[in-house]
Image 1 (cartoon, rainbow, N blue to C red):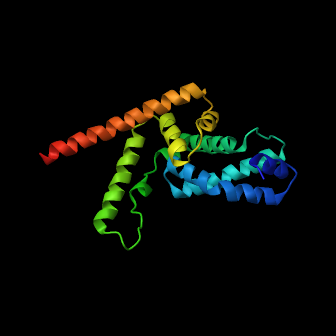
Image 2 (image 1 turned 90 degrees about the vertical axis):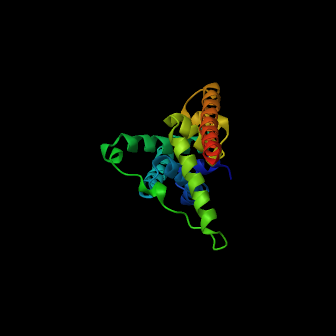
Image 3 (image 1 turned 45 degrees about the vertical axis):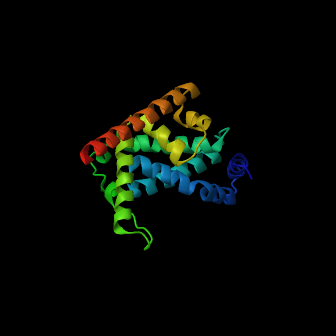
Length: 187
């Protein structure tokens, strides 16, 4: 059953349709929100709020043409609302520095190297403007099509393509600069 058919079923009060949508989209939406807000507790709350808004909108008859971009747009707007709160601005983002557990076969060195690489990628992403960072996350972490991202971000497709190109160019420059420093340090 397509997402659009599920949302029609949800409009008619079918609880199984909501369960199917949650099953399909809970993990990707939560992951997207978590990458934006970098706080698991906020990510959990906003994910739940996202599905509540989907349910309310469907029950009120406000149905989108395409469900997936619509849900990501709701998630994006919830993140924007959170960022506007003064309480959020004052919080530390300690979750970003927690170690990730790996299988026993990994050595301590390989675990640390992967962790450092992830931290470098996160820092590089954070150096991008907010809208550019969202585009990269949606494209490469959530594997969304450019058309879907343009719909989520509410911008023309060509503008989105231009921002994605600039973002990737900026990230390449950050990593090229790091590579040059590493080579110079070894000399």
